[in-house]
Amino acid sequence: QVQLVQSGAEVKKPGASVRLSCKASGYIFTNYYLHWVRQAPGQGLEWMGMINPSGGSTNYAQSFQGRVTMTSDTSTSTVYMELSSLRSGDTAAYYCTRYFGGNSPLFDFWGQGTLVTVSS
Amino acid sequence: DIQVTQSPSSQSASVGDRVTITCRASQDISTYLAWFQQRPGKAPKPLIYGASSLHSGVPSKFSGSGSGTDFTLTISSLQPEDSATYYCQQYNTYPWTFGQGTRVEI
Image 1 (cartoon, chains in turn cyan, purple):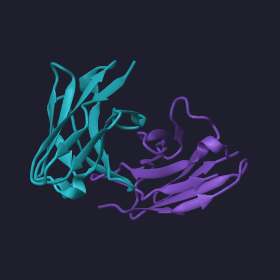
Image 2 (cartoon, chains in turn red, brown):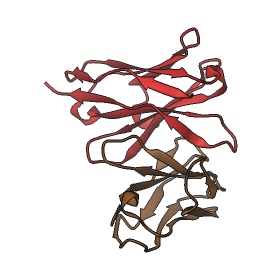
Image 3 (cartoon, chains in turn brown, purple):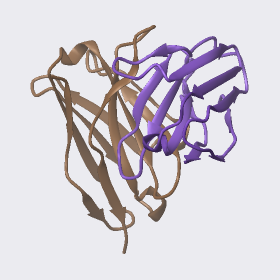
């Protein structure tokens, strides 16, 4: 069965970086784009960007440009999302989710989420 | 960026009611519009993609319609378990953007 399993909760100080992982199983890893979506406490959903595990091409939301890096490791079917220069506004739940592309179902499976807390 | 405006921001309804949520995109997105349901503390659950296609396992009480810039999500025969926040999302053009959400209370 398809699973996206994310790494555990993180507590970071302002200015630090955090690297989250999302391990995929149950499907052909390189066939699906992996996206990251975050949600600050009590707020809505925010699309952060995506990576194509087949080749590693990425597309980031402008609001994260320069601070976010998404990478993939096909040997372990894992994608990583690193966010640098953390500030309190980055406190949020971070989700990974997948998409095949075209007219296929969008974001049909989601990771369980990783809570990142940024606090001094 | 394409702005996606959802309305209403919240809605109160009774068991058995029909609820309609609208989503308006700031430019033509064809049918690249999805709907999600989210309960507190949980990951979003996909409901609709391609404006009107139901995800596998989603009950037919949920339906979506629209194309271009105007879209609707309809929930018929409302039940207590439908109490949640609903989000639309455009995926026609990067950066993909979400609506601000509609909280449905039973």
